[in-house]
Amino acid sequence: GESVGLHLPTLSVQEGDNSIINCAYSNSASDYFIWYKQESGKGPQFIIDIRSNMDKRQGQRVTVLLNKTVKHLSLQIAATQPGDSAVYFCAESNQAGTALIFGKGTTLSVSS
Amino acid sequence: GAVVSQHPSRVICKSGTSVKIECRSLDFQATTMFWYRQFPKKSLMLMATSNEGSKATYEQGVEKDKFLINHASLTLSTLTVTSAHPEDSSFYICSASRGYRGNIQYFGAGTRLSVL
Image (tube, rainbow over all chains, first blue to last red; front, side, top):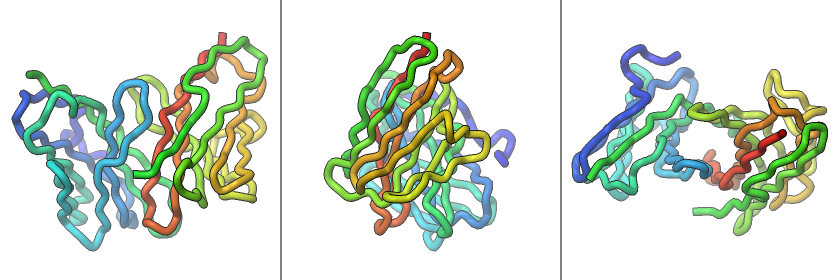
C-alpha cells in the first residue's frame, strides 16, 4: 500500500522551479511503470515510462526515477511551466498482463 | 503518440435509458482495450479489459450485464451502460494498447455521463 507521508495529494510550485512528484507502488512483482498527466475533463496523457531493469530514464524536461528496494517512483519536471498544471498519476503493471493499476494522483499547481 | 478517439464526450440521459460509448484507435490496431471509471478527484478504476473477438474480462464488483462491452474489431470497442441510473453518473475513459510496445496505454478524452 501507500507509504504514509510519501504521497502528497497536492503540490504548488512557482514557474521555473523544478517539481518532484512521488509515488509508492504496491506490487513488488510490477516491472513496468508509467507516468500520466491528466488535465481537467480530459483523459490521461502519457508522459514517460520505465521498466524495472532501469533506475532512471530521461525525457524532455522530465525524469523518472525508480527505487525498487523501497518500491518508490518519482517524476521530476524541470523548469515547471503553468501548462504543467494538472493531476499526475503513476501506474504500474506486471509482465503477466497489460492492465494498469493507478496511484492516487498528485495535483500540481504552477503559479507565475 | 497514438490517437484514441472517444465519443461522445458528454451525455445527459434520463434514468432507465441505455447509453453507448465508443472508443476508437485511429492510427494503430489495438489488440487490447480497457474501460475505466473515474469519480471526481479520484484515480482511475479499471472496469474491464477487452481483447478483440473475445469476451471482456470484468474486474471484481463490476456488473457485466450492466456494463456491456463489445470489441468487434481491432480499432473499435464500445461500452453500453444499460438502464442507467443516477449512481452510474461518472467519467468513463477508454484506453487502447498496441500490445507489442510494452504496456503503454493510450487514453481517449473520456465521456462525462450524467443520468437524471
